[in-house]
Amino acid sequence: MHTVASILALATTASAIQGFNYGSTFTTGAAKQQSDFENEFTTAQNLKGTSGWTSARLYTMVQGGTASDPIAAIPAAIKTKTTLLLGLWASGGDTSFANEILALKAAIEQYGDDFANLVDGISVGSEDLYRNSPMGIAAGSNVGAEPATIARYIKETKDTIAGTGLEGTPVGHVDTWTAWYNGTNQAVIDACDWLGMDAYPYFQDTMPNGISESKSLFQEALGKTQQAGGGKAVWITETGQPVSGKTVGQSVASTDNAETYWKDVVCPLVASGTNLWYYTLQDAAPDTPSPSFGIVGDKLTTTPLFDLSCDDVDTSSSSSSSAGSSSTTKASSATASGSGSSTTETASLGNSGGSPGGVNSAQISSEASATVTPSISTTLSNSAATGTGTGTGSGSGVGSGSGTNGTFTAPPSATSTVPASGATGLQSGAFAAAFAAIMVAIYAF
Image (tube, rainbow, N blue to C red):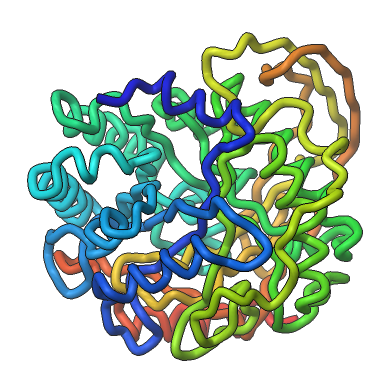
């Protein structure tokens, strides 16, 4: 059986976990089958220019088109020796989550140790806290979950795996870095063994976000998540730079910039032994979304669109403490102070990439200040007060900064999918269309 300490300790080595995010369906709405997952996993393992990308992050335990059957990615992982960061979708309500638990139980019983030995961790939910926040609701991203609900689901998951081959597997939650930095979500932090951080500097258009700024923006997000976690391990569950799509702020979507992001952000994370799941191997297929984050094109191939090698990469400015370090690492204290009318927030418009039965279109995120546009009555007013936090590693530091209110914008052409709460977890096309219409009406550039 797993122990939390033994699995989290993997992140302290240079051979920590690396993988990609995998949705459960194609853009046609057809559910991926075992052979589809096998093809994707094998491609990831054999990508030219790199090695070790042998983990798969999933968003749901339920196979598309079923009520609670285990997802076909599990036998595919067993066959290809791909490890798994399991995902339980947590925004469909208690009935939907009960089906996720049923699928988890069935997988444990059906696949036994062959399955259990491949599990890196379990994520309960994905960006539910952001989507439930005033900012997320104002953006039209209305399907989320309360912190108390996510904390309860985490406990239920731990109770489910107790006494099984998955006992001791670290259980966490994935959300935007601003959701972690929001003190109202402390109950979830307390319940987690690790925190999963999603961060996309590409969408951070309320400040300079050209590709040359991406590394510093990412490191700032990571530092704040580590501070909020109080020494708990931080796993990078989504990040990336699109290979195509519109320019957002100063960030240009291109293969050249995607390669720069890989060299500047991804390679140092790999070198530091950080658990990382990149977004993504291949974007939604057969249709390619805009923006597209896939490192391979519309056909699965082991030849990526840009160079994935990490030779001679400068890792000196990577995080001073490994983002995925063991929770048993002694933490030193650090103090940070700030002034200004509001703290900077990040908005991420849901995670359409792996919603149960949903279209695997690109994640839509936007980095924004804490106040939404004047046309929206809901605002976030996080006062900048002095506070203390903890982080892994050694040393201490003091920093100060000021923040001002800003506006929240999101691209009108953005595509987002939200799972319905039905037993099958299939997405409602009408709801997705209505949500897209709201996005266009409210957040036109």
